[in-house]
Length: 304
Image (cartoon, rainbow, N blue to C red; front, side):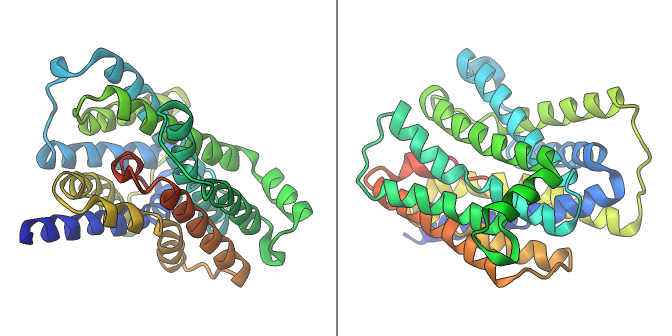
């Protein structure tokens, strides 16, 4: 029991680390660029994972998991990092990060459709409230304002589009890995592949100057540590801790992430934003409660 509590606590640390990622990625991208900064983050994180999780024995991986897991994981991480890096302002970066947090609701819906996860009618209001929460966030200070939301998205369709696509991709990743992974964990390999993809994009785009200031280096180390150690801590929690507690706690990431990002980026957020963020959390929790009979399948998808 003592070991389980310790593992659960370590898993909760992972949630805090992941909640800081939006603000840290934005901090890095402001000095090193959207692509270059992301490439540096995932490179350093991959090195950290080599020492914490270790290099997996790829030959033992199911081939379908190796292919689809790699493809979907890399695609998601690119969407996440670049959507935040391409944001026009810190406020917009936080909003984009909130759109990404539609993944819990999307993950559960995918598990219901493709993995035959049993559910109750709570799934309907849960999913609708999560979507409504995002609309509330994007509506600006007026809350639910369709005109304001449309204008907000049109200001930077690339960032918002990447974040929304990323949420869908992560739901697909969780669904695929639940069926194909056979207990294997390829996160170290996937981070290495993500770093390579970002460096390829960086070089193909002509590179670009990186300002390695003291602040940029601090943000880089913190961002890479949050990602690398976050995955390592989450693995310990999921394998040896209380999965039900971790699954429930993970759905509070949107609010915690917004709070940390607002602090790190010195960006005040209106009351309407917090209302929308709370709705995303409530909607995700209702989706989780609708499937609480099988918490492990729900918890597998936790991410930044």
